[in-house]
Length: 231
Image (cartoon, rainbow, N blue to C red; front, side):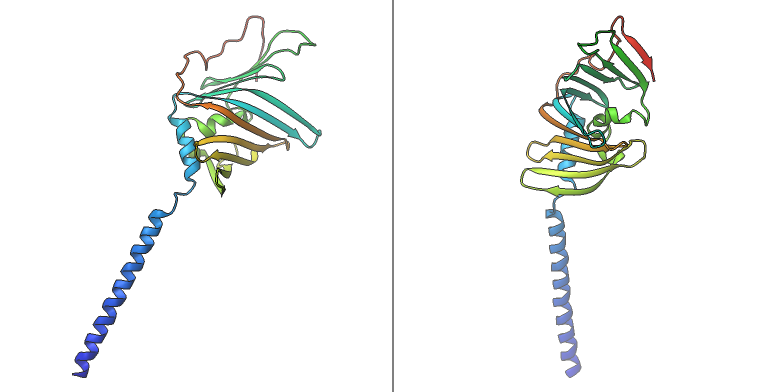
């Protein structure tokens, strides 16, 4: 009889233990499902750019050189589409960068005080000039996670700030940060330090998604009389 009662007691304890364990596992699974996806705001924002036929935005770029003690501000407009890229600055001087998928074109108007022919540089995309079209690598074409690794994520009520780094040494930058507006699913700022210590900060505004792609926007022909140099 005692052996029988012991067996009943053991089975009861085992049953309650199994139920408790199952309840714990169920709670853990439920908790896992309720946890936010890792880097979800960065994923959502960059996916929005990639799915857009063309995205256009205003940009203010500030380059700070501690070595020279200078700070230079540029203002213009950027357009990206499936890895193609166009950046036209209007301040302080007019400059234009176009990446057509094969060649980077860099056009610079001569200063007003030193008139002369338009200066145009052309080059194939390589590790030396990849930083010029970095925005296209981050927001257009392939997923950002294919070429970059997320180091940290900091969240507040409105923004998500990500520290990331390139997976290869082709891109000569460090301290790369991206700021995402959580509600809007937009990238509001990108900053980084180049190989000579200059700190570049780009702030984006008036972002327009799914604009109709102009067939000639990402094509470039040097203007007549321009001085063209191959790099």
